Length: 505
Image (cartoon, rainbow, N blue to C red; front, side):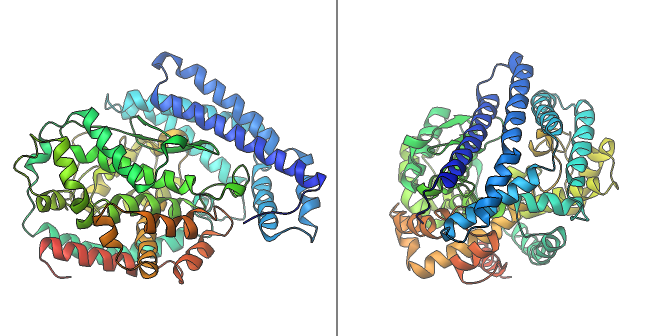
């Protein structure tokens, strides 16, 4: 994927691309610091700084001269296919950005920072009432943002298109309906079977050893620590701060070693995607992941299809027991494998197993639609959350800490399109893995030897390197030979959990 156009106009456009990327990376740096090391008393100043940079970036992104340059180059026929795609994506981004007034962008950004800071205090205090005015403003700002795009009759369609281009609320609903129909009886069957042993997970696992073990695994996976690092935060995430600076965060529970391990594997999947984008696309509109769903497919693939597999524990249980000899003294490899795949209805999305996880996502997706449609008031959201969990998972949280306050997404200042990508990613994770396995038979044997070269190599070539060169749907078809389908995912779940729990579906 090399480009050839070197005239003055193209050079100017490349400069503008790089400036926008650098301003975006600086904003991400401020956000990363706010989520990791920022002193609590500095939150207000940080929100102001981020608002200023957001306004400056928006001014650069909506500069009429930039638009004229895109028009000029877009009308020429001597661009390479990659250059033409860069211009097309940049033009789409420009047209979208120019609809937002600069003052609105600054207000939205500042509100997001203030809301996040309030959430970090409100959640541990179980104080949803404190967040109601923030969420009400977030909803108002979100609806205002969608109003600038009247071609989307449903505000939810606008937000879904922003993160998963080409998808609509109706299409997502169809995928969710197919999954719900298959997953509900699977959950019933598995939760009715004998549960695996998990008592040893509650023993003491020192944080430093947990972090060292997880970092060793992701080094083996292919995460490049010369272009990234891992730190601690409330809610784990991955962020790109520059072309060669892709960082991850995790959180640790000393009485549950799977918390840090699988958070690390998950975020490393996101990060390897970003680290794998072709060098000549970095600093351009094509220099990142193509959609939330494709991005999530990579975190889920490395976390679940690899990291929770029997082959993974064949490779790593010995090292894991060496790291924690006392708490694992009476534990076998098979017991560890089964414990890492427990199926149980739970309140926390990020702790949910593969079979119940999508029910958490569906709950949030449906609540978002109700909020955006005006059928649910923010002040009633906590009660609606509890009612939905009772209906979908048969559970009710004792407080809002593990209810409506548990996820950070709505507390960054925007409501809409925040969650469907997780389930789309689950679906695509199995579809990509199945395609990789067709091209590289016996991947399970590679994993059992902690050899991830073929899998990582196939993903880098077929998923990571193209960045945004193709649309999400086109990327999926090119990589797997078919459009997105739930069948590989359901096949994977049936085979895995049928064997683990001795049930048939």
